[in-house]
Image 1: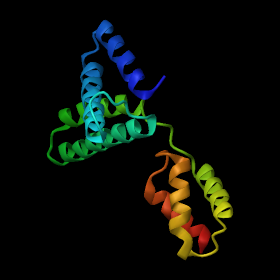
Image 2: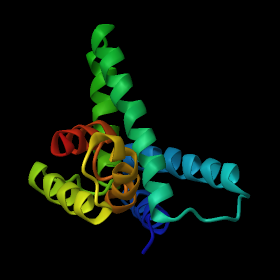
Image 3: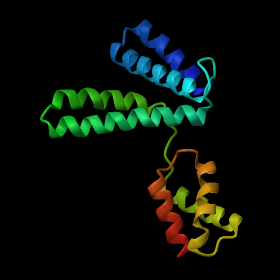
Image 4: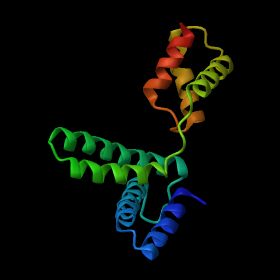
Length: 150
């Protein structure tokens, strides 16, 4: 089942259970997925799971930014609502990798690429991005590669 199919299925389930919060989040997510498909080529195109996960990640980042803004602005009730929406979106993101897993995959990729210095960091990062498919934040990945190449 693709990510988009899972969103559709969960949206129907939220309608049946009358879960208005989850339904609202899933409707916004479905809309964002549709906009991404249109931007890619046309409305009938279905995004692959990596592209769909990128859209979900973007939506989650927006919620995180809103939480921070509402907290700074003294609006805890709105921040709480955004936290609830964020927790729903996090269910659709791939599980993040642990530090040990990151270290191991970076070590393997460096060996595969035959990299020996920081000058070859770009090639290693490109190969890693394909392997981790959004399960690791770019900064953390870059820092680990730089650490191991030093």
